[in-house]
Image 1: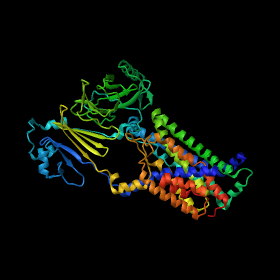
Image 2: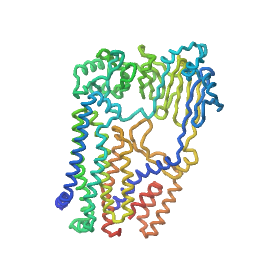
Image 3: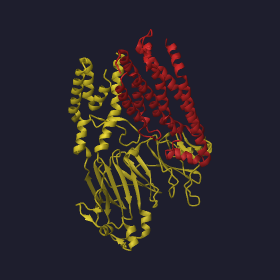
Image 4: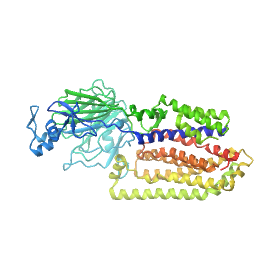
Length: 407
Length: 223
């Protein structure tokens, strides 16, 4: 009996690594990753164009290819460096005067990956002094935590700085903060032009803006946009235009900018995204913001004007490898697989996925194989029942496990 | 009976345990001296920033210590037993042979986890000198998968050594290595936090494995 338990445990536990390695090995051998096209928006023709992997140069919706010169004139706001260097940059685009300085102020890119919603993070952050000394940011000598209060820890001594902690805790209290902090968003790096501090979600899902100016706390409770109950993500932008504090994704998938100084919300006029499965990137130029969304087997793109009006949109279904020949074969071979990651997280989170009923035929085959093999070795029927059942459920993994750990 | 077994195992394993402990101690002292050096050279702020935001793992050289320790303990504990089939004597003691075998596994586990506990506590202790508890906790979260890998490899190699057939032995070790490899797939601070229960369950499932190969040995399966 005890021996039987140990045997069953061994078979069960051997299925775990096999369900990881065998499908992974199949992918290494046969999987071709589907590269989404890079979508750009032309301010001249007011339509989308594409850079596709495997194809050289720019193409349009119909697949027509453009030469370098044609691309330059179609996308002056994209190829402005090239055009300026050749002296071919137009003075106006769509009636708006374009000056070289505008690119420095208006160009930016923000990329938000769905997997970064959650992940291992040590909850200690440096709070930068927002008033620049000699024109640059310097890394502070302490880091903060927000648990029962806001505490600053001096790095060199590993001790709490009581005076500073009390001042910031008081400021948080006055703003109505509910301890502890649920999530803290910011850019903890000194390699940026200036600092806009942190956006902190408190335990009641309210949003607070925490900064330090001349060593003193500057805390503001920020009212969430109408209808937003939970914030999924805040990306503090710190762009050179200083127009916005942060890009905010609501749990429902709406995308907002928080205007600097006024704390007013502007919503992007696009349908909500799936924050757990879709990556979003936004790039701005002097006239437009192009939003690209990739995920769930689809590429979507939106062209939004500077005053947040939707001008054009595009959507394309991507070929799904699982529907290709090799992808289908995989579904017949493996009844399930072990996956390390869940959507919206960079934690290792082992779980079974890709359950496939098509694998039942191969499972049956392995079940019969192990029974025939067992009969040949004159194993008693009751012992074969176990192997049979294991192969029926766990297919090839069960077969290897049961074959290795038979009596 | 169990006390006598423990004494027998201790006499056999004391040098392995002491040597493993000394090795672990040296590796922690090495980590400490390196840490003290980088604090002197780069300053506390840079090191805190590196640990918090750039994924610097000052204790990464601790990664394979549990694995080596588990492997050494299993080999030094079980190889003398199967040489000249000495384990047969153990199986004819006045106690159930499976119980006696399982006691061997438990005694080895106790010694192994004892060393792991002391060495890990030292590592966390030196971390606490330089860093706040958030970082110390993150170190613990990161080393637990490595410690479980060490325990697993001890259990896997032990039951594989007792197996009489060579081809089976190799198959066990291959599957065992694949399962231990899951603990090393990714090296980033605290990444395995949500998978610790599964990794523990996998390790515990190997605990009675000795009964499986032990009874094959007793039945006299020929190698």
